[in-house]
Amino acid sequence: MPKSLSQSEIDDFRARLISVAERLFVERGRDEVSMRQLAQELGVSVMTPYRYFKDKDDILAATRASGFDRFADALETAYASVEDPVQRSRMVGEAYLKFAFENPAAYRLMFDLTQPNEEDYPELARAGERARKTMSAHVECLLRAGVLEGDPEVIAHVCWAAIHGLVVLKLADKIAPNIPFETLWLQMSRALNVGFGPRSRLTAAA
Amino acid sequence: MPRSLTPPEVEGFRSRLIGVAARLFAEGGPAAVNMRNLSEQLNVSVMTPYRYFRDKDEILAAARAWGFDALSDALSTAFEAGGDECVDRARSVAYAYLTFAFENDAVYKLMFDLSQPSETEYPDLARAAARMRVVLVDYVRNLAEAGLVGGEPELAAHVFWAAFHGLVVLKLSDKVSPHLDFEEVWRELTRALTAGFAPAEGVGAGDGEVRLFAA
Image (tube, rainbow over all chains, first blue to last red; front, side):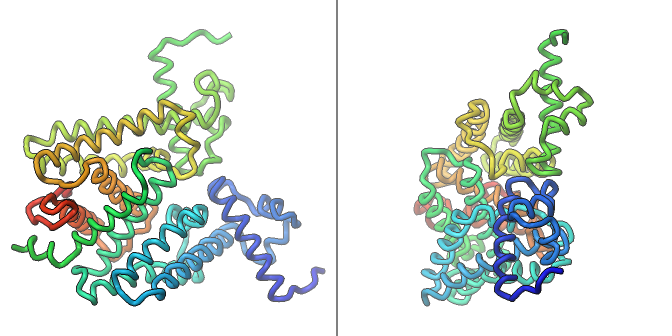
């Protein structure tokens, strides 16, 4: 009979399991990861992971939720670090890039993978929703300040698509080698600023 | 001893193998692409794929190169077929890009997979990927010469490409909010970047007339 575990032992084991799972899911793909392999990598008995999680999809959901929470932490910290909406937006953008390039495995599981029955995992839904909110908060702030104009959800999605595209092209090593990433990022931000700025709206309407 | 194959037979088998590899990859991830699954799906012996490719990474690199060449062909064809007006050609090319990605989603995902080995080991893949960038840059240069896009064409092409690609892959992995109309997000992305790259003041003021890539 296994002894009962303290909360900190449980948390430690969950964290270790999540970090191993993050790597395995990315390396092998969801279908090719088994509970047995996870146990092996952790050096525990085959049954141990079942004391914490129902099955591998449960582990995948917890792994992705942990990614979304860490991502949201980083973006919220950046958001709170300055008052000026424009500065704030820049800080959030830079925090986004930093997280993606420092945590490419977590980033992939969060945004590049389709998990079946995602809605069965309330903790994942909560963390995913929180991440989405932190991504659009700075856009709403710019809209309130009159720096941007338009539908907040559409603008937030366009900005997300643009920055995500830049990140994944970079991670896939598909950007022309002579182009500095920073320059691309700068031009993209400027273009989006102009494109969603009130002045462009006025000329478009004229 | 196997008889030697004619060049069309070799080509035919290679392209079947590439198609199966891309599908296995899209359905089961990188580990699903192994010689056993490949030979089963192709109904050949486990050793047969080795007559054409050294290992699975070489098969995946060939599949990616095939994808980049097919995408380049589709974009070039759309450009030629787009008519005399720059804006119409732009629309035609953008539409061809989206069509290729959504109709060949397995290959598209494979082409842009984030954990692929360095292209330097696969010169044909490096060539095909570079060719596609040249097609995109040439076509933005064409818009720049017509006074529709300002700034440096290679940078502008990369920014448009990254944003398009980002929206495509978010859609392919089911991440675009269900409350939003994909077409509308696409139109707004296009409109905003076009305004952002309007030539009046560098990456400067917007010009309502220009609708680069508008779908």
